[in-house]
Length: 165
Image (cartoon, rainbow, N blue to C red; front, side, top):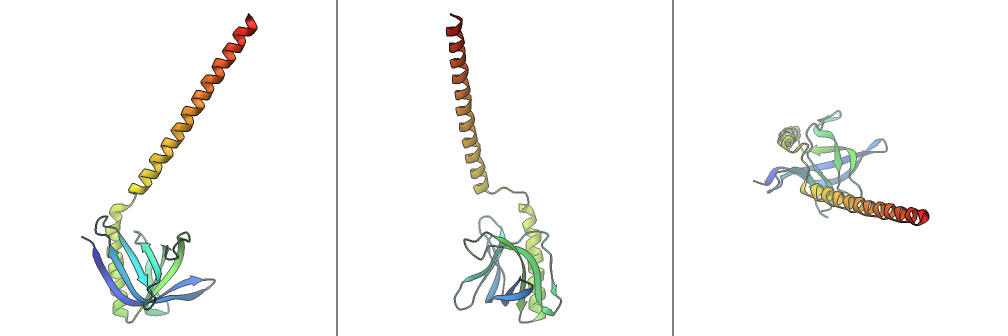
């Protein structure tokens, strides 16, 4: 079953150009997809609802307490919250209202990583379709190349026969 596994108000930051820059303030959620079972972290800004963090939880992600605050957790993630911009690997920090909330977040994030291990190495249906389309295209080029080669061989044989006569 899908649903929300964790939710808490947080301030998120990204480490850019040597410093932590604020991305937004709002609820950070761990959401489990109801059909695929995959878990993602989603965070929207409180007032505008603009997405400021959006990524699948990946097993092996290093999550640790921020050196400067027991209320914050730092991790390196592949975030795609910038919409059409390519997903990028970023240092992200989530700061919570209390150390307890931060510990609970880390605990739930670690459980989510454990759950996501079952999907490692899995190829999505979308990827399978893309691969099948690419294979079909490659095959059609191969058939055209074979046909041209056969035609060229036939023309060469025809030319040689005429020259012999």
